[in-house]
Image (tube, rainbow, N blue to C red; front, side):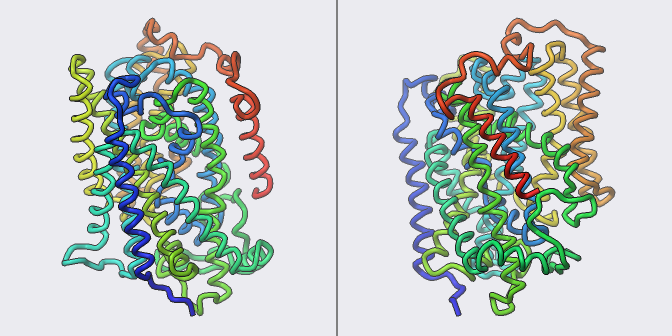
Length: 564
C-alpha cells in the first residue's frame, strides 16, 4: 500500500520552493531601475508600464487562482460535481467585457488606481468609497481567504486534526502567520515587478501540480467512460454535511442544474448572478485590474484579458474534476475504504493517497504557490491604493521615493490585517461559499456605477455616490441577515436583486440631481457601445483582439454545449 505520509524529500522540495520564490521576489526589488517610465513610484507600483499581453494574462490568472480554488473547488466537486466550475467558465465572458470596453478607457485615463478613474469620471467622494471597498476586498476577500485555505492545506498534509496546536497556539494560525510573513517580505521589497515575476513562475508550478494530480487520478479510475459509469450509479448527493456526503443516483458531469439541485446553483441563478460578481471582480477590482493598468499599450491591455480567458478554461478540468474523480475512487473502494475526513480535505487526501514521494512535495508547493501569489497581488494593490489615493492626492508634491516607502509600510500593515481577518472564513459551510457570498454583497453597487458610468453619459456624480453608499448599506443588511442565520437565500439571485436596486437608485438619483458631464470625463465614456469595436484591431491572427474575442466566445460556447 502506498505510503500516505510526507517524506524528507517532499519537505525538501517545499522548503526549496519557499526559498526560491522569496529570493526571486527580493531579486526583483534589487533590479528595479529608477528613471523608467513613471519614475521609481511608477516602476514599483505599475512595473514601469512595461507589461506585455502574455505576462498580463498570466498575472491576472495567477492573481485570481489561489489555494481556495484547489481546496474549495475540489470540495464542492466532491459534494456536487462540476456545477461550481461555472465560476471559472463564466469568467471568460466578463474578461471579454474588460478587454473590449473597460481596458481602453483605463489606459487612456493613465490612472494608477481604479478609484482615481472613478474620481475623474464622477467626483472625489466616489473615489473615497471605492478606495475603502477596494482595501477591504484586497485584505479580506483576496488575502484572508488565501491564507486561511493555505493553512488548512498544510494542516491536512501534516495529518493534524482540526483544533491541533503548535506550542500551544492553534496550528491554523501558526501557518497563516508563516505564509503571510514570507509573502509580505518579497512583495514589500520588490513591488509589482516582484509580484509579476513570482506569479509567472508560480502559475506554471501551480498548473503542473494540478495537472499531475488530475492525470494520476484519471488514470487510476480508468478513463472517462469508467468515471462516467461510476458516477451514473453513485453521484447525486442525498445529504451533505461538513463531515459526510451521502450519494444517490444522478450525474456529476453536468454544468447546468435545475432549481431542485442540492448545490443551490440553478442555471438561471448563474446566468443572472454571475455577471454581477464577475464584472466587479474582473473589470473593477484593483487587485485584478492593476496588471492591465501596467500594460505597455492599449493592444497589450486588450489582449492580456483575452489570454487570461483562455487560461480560465483549464481550472474546471484541473481544479474541479479532481473532486469528481475522488468521488468515483471512493465509491470503488480504491483507497481501501478510506475517504476524506471532511469534504474540505478532498484535495489534500488525493495528494497524500495518490502521489509518490517527490510529487507530493511538488503539488504541496503548488498549493502554497497559489496562496502566496494571491496574497502578493493583493498586497501590492493595497500599497498602490494607500500611496496614491490616501497620500498623493492630499500631498501632490510628495516624492516617488516617499510613495515607495509608504507602499512598503502598507504592505507590512496589510499583511498583519489579513492574518487577523483570515479566520472569518471558518464561519461558512465551505470557503468557496464564504468568498462568493462576501463578493455578492460588495459587488452590486460598484458594478452598477461602473456600467452606467461608462455607457451612460448622463450618469451624475451625486447619483454615483448615493448608489455606492446606498448599495453598500443594502449589501451590509444582506450580510447581517446571512451571518446571523436570519435569512439565507440564493446568494446569486440576491446579488442580481441588489444590482437591479442599485441601477434603479442611480437612474432615479441622476434625474433628481443632474450634472453636466465634466470635460475630463468625456474620454472616459462610450457614446456608442460599438465604438470600441471599430478602428485598429491590433494585429494579425489572434493578435487581433476582435478575432481573439470571437475565438474565446466560440470555445466557451462549445464547452457549455458539451457539458450542459
